[in-house]
Length: 76
Image (tube, rainbow, N blue to C red; front, top):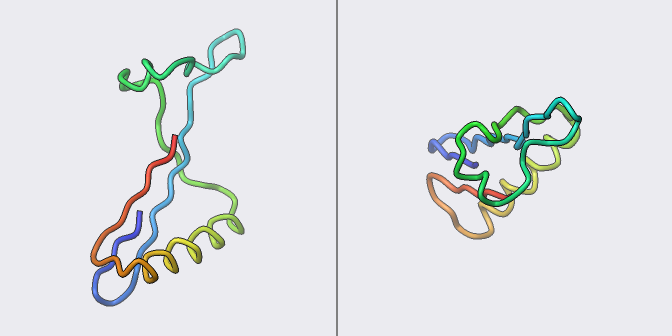
């Protein structure tokens, strides 16, 4: 998500994290589980270099598309 407050653009990143069952398999197994509130959560992206690259790309896209105030993209 990119949020612009007239002074600068703020980028908020989150990575979808799925629970792991005792057998080692992820809890997410079908699109139906998207309706279950506890099937996944968002966690901060830990790779600092990746965060820096993504921030550069999304702020550029925000500018090129002439976005104003707020822009968001959700990927599955």
